[in-house]
Image (tube, rainbow, N blue to C red; front, side, top):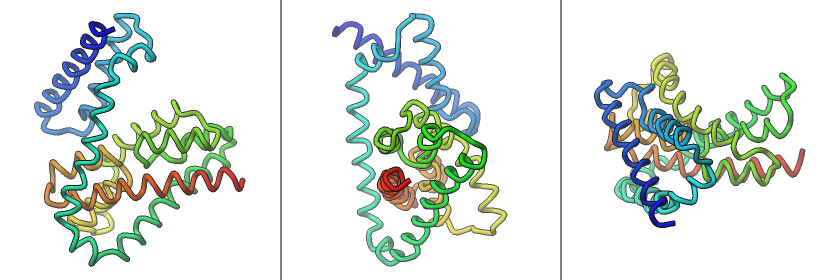
Length: 227
Protein backbone atom coordinates (compact mmCIF):
# COMPACT_ATOMS: atom_id res chain seq x y z
CA UNK A 1 0.00 0.00 0.00
CA UNK A 2 2.92 2.37 0.63
CA UNK A 3 4.14 2.41 -2.98
CA UNK A 4 0.73 3.26 -4.55
CA UNK A 5 0.18 5.93 -1.90
CA UNK A 6 3.52 7.58 -2.60
CA UNK A 7 2.90 7.34 -6.34
CA UNK A 8 -0.48 9.03 -6.28
CA UNK A 9 0.61 11.68 -3.81
CA UNK A 10 3.51 12.47 -6.13
CA UNK A 11 1.15 12.59 -9.13
CA UNK A 12 -1.20 14.92 -7.24
CA UNK A 13 1.62 17.27 -6.25
CA UNK A 14 2.98 17.25 -9.80
CA UNK A 15 -0.46 18.16 -11.16
CA UNK A 16 -0.73 21.00 -8.66
CA UNK A 17 2.73 22.36 -9.52
CA UNK A 18 1.88 22.23 -13.22
CA UNK A 19 -1.47 23.92 -12.62
CA UNK A 20 0.18 26.61 -10.48
CA UNK A 21 2.75 27.30 -13.20
CA UNK A 22 -0.04 27.61 -15.78
CA UNK A 23 -1.93 29.98 -13.49
CA UNK A 24 1.09 32.25 -13.08
CA UNK A 25 1.87 32.20 -16.80
CA UNK A 26 -1.72 33.17 -17.59
CA UNK A 27 -1.42 36.34 -15.50
CA UNK A 28 -3.59 34.91 -12.71
CA UNK A 29 -6.64 34.40 -14.88
CA UNK A 30 -9.52 32.97 -12.85
CA UNK A 31 -10.31 30.29 -15.43
CA UNK A 32 -6.79 28.94 -14.89
CA UNK A 33 -7.16 28.56 -11.12
CA UNK A 34 -5.10 25.59 -9.88
CA UNK A 35 -8.14 24.08 -8.18
CA UNK A 36 -9.77 23.84 -11.60
CA UNK A 37 -6.89 22.92 -13.89
CA UNK A 38 -5.18 20.78 -11.25
CA UNK A 39 -8.34 18.76 -10.70
CA UNK A 40 -8.66 18.24 -14.44
CA UNK A 41 -5.09 16.95 -14.63
CA UNK A 42 -5.67 14.52 -11.78
CA UNK A 43 -8.85 13.25 -13.44
CA UNK A 44 -6.95 12.67 -16.69
CA UNK A 45 -4.26 10.75 -14.78
CA UNK A 46 -6.90 8.60 -13.05
CA UNK A 47 -8.65 7.89 -16.35
CA UNK A 48 -5.38 6.89 -18.06
CA UNK A 49 -4.41 4.63 -15.16
CA UNK A 50 -7.98 3.28 -14.85
CA UNK A 51 -8.02 3.96 -11.11
CA UNK A 52 -11.35 4.59 -9.35
CA UNK A 53 -11.83 7.48 -6.96
CA UNK A 54 -12.08 5.35 -3.80
CA UNK A 55 -8.62 3.89 -4.48
CA UNK A 56 -7.20 7.35 -5.15
CA UNK A 57 -8.83 8.78 -2.00
CA UNK A 58 -7.30 6.04 0.13
CA UNK A 59 -3.86 6.53 -1.41
CA UNK A 60 -3.86 10.30 -0.86
CA UNK A 61 -5.30 10.32 2.65
CA UNK A 62 -2.16 12.00 4.02
CA UNK A 63 -2.63 14.97 1.69
CA UNK A 64 -6.23 15.41 2.82
CA UNK A 65 -5.08 15.33 6.44
CA UNK A 66 -2.72 18.23 5.71
CA UNK A 67 -5.65 20.47 4.78
CA UNK A 68 -6.60 20.56 8.47
CA UNK A 69 -3.48 22.43 9.67
CA UNK A 70 -3.70 24.67 6.58
CA UNK A 71 -7.23 25.76 7.51
CA UNK A 72 -6.30 26.24 11.17
CA UNK A 73 -3.42 28.49 10.05
CA UNK A 74 -6.02 30.99 8.86
CA UNK A 75 -6.48 31.87 12.53
CA UNK A 76 -3.19 33.83 12.38
CA UNK A 77 -4.49 36.72 10.20
CA UNK A 78 -7.73 36.66 12.19
CA UNK A 79 -5.79 37.21 15.40
CA UNK A 80 -3.77 40.03 13.85
CA UNK A 81 -6.94 41.85 12.79
CA UNK A 82 -8.89 41.06 15.96
CA UNK A 83 -9.31 44.67 17.08
CA UNK A 84 -10.69 45.73 13.70
CA UNK A 85 -12.99 42.72 13.51
CA UNK A 86 -14.41 43.53 16.93
CA UNK A 87 -15.11 47.10 15.85
CA UNK A 88 -17.03 45.84 12.83
CA UNK A 89 -18.92 43.04 14.59
CA UNK A 90 -22.47 44.16 13.82
CA UNK A 91 -21.93 45.04 10.11
CA UNK A 92 -20.06 41.77 9.55
CA UNK A 93 -22.77 39.68 11.22
CA UNK A 94 -25.46 41.48 9.23
CA UNK A 95 -23.61 40.81 5.98
CA UNK A 96 -23.06 37.18 6.96
CA UNK A 97 -26.73 36.64 7.75
CA UNK A 98 -27.89 38.31 4.54
CA UNK A 99 -25.46 36.35 2.38
CA UNK A 100 -26.10 32.98 4.01
CA UNK A 101 -29.90 33.23 3.96
CA UNK A 102 -29.99 34.61 0.41
CA UNK A 103 -27.71 31.86 -0.90
CA UNK A 104 -29.64 29.03 0.72
CA UNK A 105 -33.21 30.21 0.22
CA UNK A 106 -32.47 31.58 -3.25
CA UNK A 107 -31.17 28.21 -4.41
CA UNK A 108 -34.06 26.31 -2.84
CA UNK A 109 -36.54 28.78 -4.32
CA UNK A 110 -35.17 28.42 -7.85
CA UNK A 111 -35.12 24.64 -7.43
CA UNK A 112 -38.77 24.64 -6.35
CA UNK A 113 -39.83 26.88 -9.26
CA UNK A 114 -38.05 24.66 -11.80
CA UNK A 115 -39.32 21.39 -10.36
CA UNK A 116 -35.89 20.15 -9.31
CA UNK A 117 -35.95 16.93 -7.23
CA UNK A 118 -35.70 17.63 -3.54
CA UNK A 119 -32.49 15.64 -3.06
CA UNK A 120 -30.77 17.68 -5.78
CA UNK A 121 -32.08 20.94 -4.29
CA UNK A 122 -30.63 20.08 -0.88
CA UNK A 123 -27.36 19.18 -2.58
CA UNK A 124 -27.06 22.52 -4.40
CA UNK A 125 -28.19 24.75 -1.52
CA UNK A 126 -24.91 24.94 0.51
CA UNK A 127 -22.82 25.80 -2.57
CA UNK A 128 -21.20 28.82 -0.87
CA UNK A 129 -19.95 26.84 2.14
CA UNK A 130 -16.61 25.08 2.40
CA UNK A 131 -16.64 21.58 0.93
CA UNK A 132 -16.31 19.52 4.17
CA UNK A 133 -19.16 21.37 5.87
CA UNK A 134 -21.31 21.43 2.73
CA UNK A 135 -20.96 17.69 2.13
CA UNK A 136 -21.67 16.83 5.77
CA UNK A 137 -24.75 19.08 5.89
CA UNK A 138 -26.06 17.69 2.58
CA UNK A 139 -25.64 14.13 3.79
CA UNK A 140 -27.67 14.88 6.91
CA UNK A 141 -30.33 16.69 4.86
CA UNK A 142 -30.81 13.71 2.54
CA UNK A 143 -28.97 15.11 -0.46
CA UNK A 144 -26.13 13.79 -2.61
CA UNK A 145 -22.64 14.76 -1.35
CA UNK A 146 -21.07 14.30 -4.81
CA UNK A 147 -23.43 16.92 -6.28
CA UNK A 148 -22.68 19.23 -3.37
CA UNK A 149 -18.94 18.91 -4.06
CA UNK A 150 -19.41 19.90 -7.71
CA UNK A 151 -21.63 22.85 -6.73
CA UNK A 152 -19.04 24.08 -4.21
CA UNK A 153 -16.23 23.95 -6.79
CA UNK A 154 -18.36 25.70 -9.43
CA UNK A 155 -19.33 28.43 -6.97
CA UNK A 156 -15.71 28.91 -5.93
CA UNK A 157 -14.65 29.42 -9.54
CA UNK A 158 -17.60 31.60 -10.58
CA UNK A 159 -17.70 33.63 -7.35
CA UNK A 160 -14.58 35.73 -7.98
CA UNK A 161 -15.55 36.12 -11.65
CA UNK A 162 -18.96 37.59 -10.86
CA UNK A 163 -18.25 39.36 -7.57
CA UNK A 164 -15.91 41.92 -9.14
CA UNK A 165 -18.40 43.35 -11.68
CA UNK A 166 -21.24 43.31 -9.13
CA UNK A 167 -19.19 45.14 -6.49
CA UNK A 168 -18.02 47.69 -9.06
CA UNK A 169 -21.61 48.19 -10.20
CA UNK A 170 -22.62 48.86 -6.61
CA UNK A 171 -19.64 51.25 -6.27
CA UNK A 172 -18.19 49.30 -3.34
CA UNK A 173 -14.48 50.09 -3.26
CA UNK A 174 -13.60 49.25 0.35
CA UNK A 175 -11.04 46.42 0.32
CA UNK A 176 -12.31 44.97 3.60
CA UNK A 177 -15.86 44.71 2.30
CA UNK A 178 -14.72 43.20 -0.99
CA UNK A 179 -12.55 40.66 0.83
CA UNK A 180 -15.35 39.68 3.20
CA UNK A 181 -17.68 39.24 0.23
CA UNK A 182 -15.25 36.97 -1.62
CA UNK A 183 -14.79 34.78 1.44
CA UNK A 184 -18.55 34.62 1.91
CA UNK A 185 -19.51 33.67 -1.64
CA UNK A 186 -16.42 31.80 -2.86
CA UNK A 187 -14.99 30.15 0.32
CA UNK A 188 -11.36 28.93 -0.06
CA UNK A 189 -11.00 30.07 -3.68
CA UNK A 190 -12.18 33.51 -2.65
CA UNK A 191 -9.52 33.57 0.07
CA UNK A 192 -6.89 32.57 -2.47
CA UNK A 193 -7.96 35.50 -4.64
CA UNK A 194 -7.77 37.91 -1.70
CA UNK A 195 -4.27 36.65 -0.86
CA UNK A 196 -3.18 37.63 -4.37
CA UNK A 197 -4.87 41.02 -4.51
CA UNK A 198 -5.15 42.31 -0.91
CA UNK A 199 -3.17 40.02 1.44
CA UNK A 200 -3.54 42.46 4.32
CA UNK A 201 -7.33 41.92 4.21
CA UNK A 202 -7.32 38.11 4.23
CA UNK A 203 -8.65 38.05 7.81
CA UNK A 204 -12.01 39.32 6.57
CA UNK A 205 -12.20 36.64 3.88
CA UNK A 206 -11.19 33.89 6.33
CA UNK A 207 -13.77 35.05 8.88
CA UNK A 208 -16.51 35.10 6.25
CA UNK A 209 -15.64 31.62 4.99
CA UNK A 210 -15.58 30.10 8.47
CA UNK A 211 -18.75 31.71 9.78
CA UNK A 212 -20.69 31.13 6.57
CA UNK A 213 -19.73 27.45 6.54
CA UNK A 214 -21.02 26.92 10.08
CA UNK A 215 -24.14 29.05 9.56
CA UNK A 216 -24.98 27.29 6.29
CA UNK A 217 -24.63 23.84 7.86
CA UNK A 218 -26.89 24.73 10.79
CA UNK A 219 -29.50 26.48 8.64
CA UNK A 220 -29.65 23.70 6.03
CA UNK A 221 -30.02 21.02 8.70
CA UNK A 222 -32.79 23.00 10.39
CA UNK A 223 -34.64 23.57 7.10
CA UNK A 224 -34.38 19.87 6.20
CA UNK A 225 -36.02 18.94 9.50
CA UNK A 226 -38.79 21.51 9.16
CA UNK A 227 -39.74 20.99 5.50
